[in-house]
Length: 323
Length: 292
Image 1 (cartoon, helix red, strand yellow):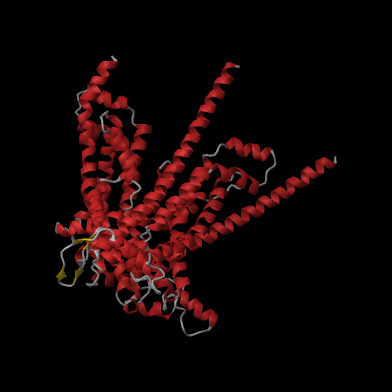
Image 2: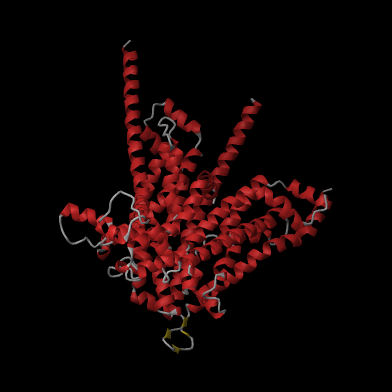
């Protein structure tokens, strides 16, 4: 019986290959090949200036050394990180608070469905449109400046996009508004997965809500918190749409809002410096890969712990059965 | 006796504490609701007002120029909005169809069949899930340029056949709700492998395909980076590129009524779909990502 089954599955094996073939062909053609050609480009010099189209020249690591000598890439990584963290701190704080409230049995928040729909709404809206909207609202002739003029009594508008801090903060606010709902829902799912017996025990022991939160909820959802942190960081490294549109691709003022991907885009479509663009891509890839490995490492640690816990539970169950 | 009274008092303070906590929670929630909705409220109000009205100052009153703005924005030949809507619809629609169908097909191939490279294929897809699209953008752009496929919608559609995250969702769904006995039964009944997939497996996969279809549609409707590299011809621009050009040109010269109207039109289809299916979608996020 077993052998005939085995025989059957072997004869069907070709279907497995046929079914997964389209995915792999398309991936190889549209992602893998471009990725390798990007890496290859990073070792060549290829500059197009006007009608002058010079042949490519192998330059080894020169693109990288130039990139590091100029140092722009470091300050753009810095900008990206600063803007990310300004948005992420309120995001994780508010999301944790909301997730804790939504799952609190004693608190019984009503209209939860409505609030969830509203806080998640900005996440599905086009980042380009939200950025444009914020630009219009905060522009010299926008409604925020009217309020500003009324309050301060000055005739001159406050030029939000001419100051480093306000530009970065506006970009961070958009990031925050677009992502806190998503994080809240993830954390809620995590909190609801915590063993309810822990909460019952805490209640019997007379723990206060803040004690329960810090000593039960936070340690229990630590893996998800790390997952949220690192995936948000990976997303943050790729930040593009919002600062690109808010600053019209210039990263102004004085390129203080220029992110790494904006830099990459500038090298591809404005500078046409493919060697440099290739080097930036490779560096971006390495950063994203390291961050992804972090997630994977935490996940597998988590899995091991979970498996152990499950085994322990089984053993206990067996023990109980024996008794 | 005394112990009883302290208990009673304790309960009382607990109740007031709970009430205070509840009040704080609702205040914060209402504030966040306002913050989340405020930009869109301004957008809706200003899309109903004419340029001079908007310049006079903001008021929380609907204007009467919605129709005029709507007509003007569609007549604007610099930004052919009709084409933008059509292009975005074509790209996002085909991406949703292709991505869900082929992801389900790939997941099915790995879920049901035994073959030598199965484990490798699965691990490979999980690894590439983490690679950001920007990393291969340069190579992708140059390849499309060499093939003469810039200013073409195909490069925005075809790559969606290989969608690792969608695949992963489908695979998880199959693990939980596609028993292999169904496939065996179909084989005994003389169904060939493709027909089994199309007429027996697909209906079972419907809920998962719907959720992922919506997500893929929204993601591509909103996608800006790759399309902005591939397309610069007016008639082929998708909506995000058009919205971005509002910023590129001399912003202050624009008819602000049209600016708000255009943003309104760019986001409203997705908002309607979202509000109609919000329960479905919010459940999908928690399902898809916690395990991911």
